[in-house]
Amino acid sequence: MSEGCSTDNQHRPADHDGQQAPSHDLANGPPSGIERRQHPRYPYPIRDGVKVVLPESATTFPARPQTLSAGGIGLLHGSFVHPQQRCVVALITLNNAEECVTGKIVRCRHVQGHVHDVGIQFDDLVDINRFVRVEDTTAVQPVQPRGPSGAAPPYPPAIMSLIQELHHLASTGAARDLMCRHAAKLTRLLHDTSA
Image (tube, rainbow, N blue to C red; front, side):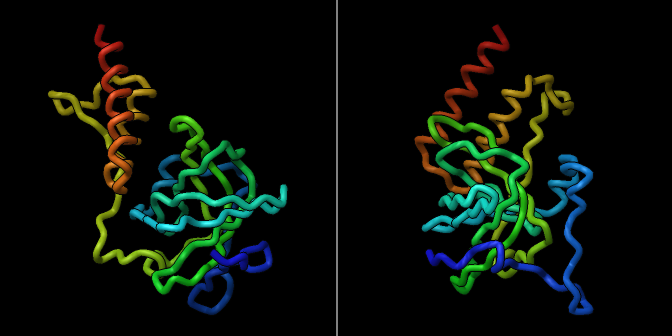
């Protein structure tokens, strides 16, 4: 992967007049969960990973992308990163070119071992068609399990989180052993809550 991403080499999409598109209003805090999920997410399996630059700490790290939407990216990383940090992500286009996109880390959740699920919200929307063949891919949707009556079961947040993570892993083609470990952990949690 090239070393071309910095805060000077940023993706700034233009609107229909050729002017730069306005960035999100970050001064009022992070958007709600509904706002974060307003764009369909697609699997984004880049074999060699992507590079993330944290300009404030002059840190660069590799990460394994999982999903991409017009508004952000979900990736796996080998250690914790602090939410609210500004960042630049080196996305890989369908033509295998690097395109730098600015954003902010909005989530870092421990998965297991050293693995963390990191969510980055882009400052500006990207054209998803430059990175994913949308017509050949099914969007990843959040899972809302239902009980026998059709109503959402009263599962604790830890169980709901594991269900969503397992769905995400399955839809992005994660390694079988990782999915099995998540399924076993989910089974234990379900057993513990029903006992």
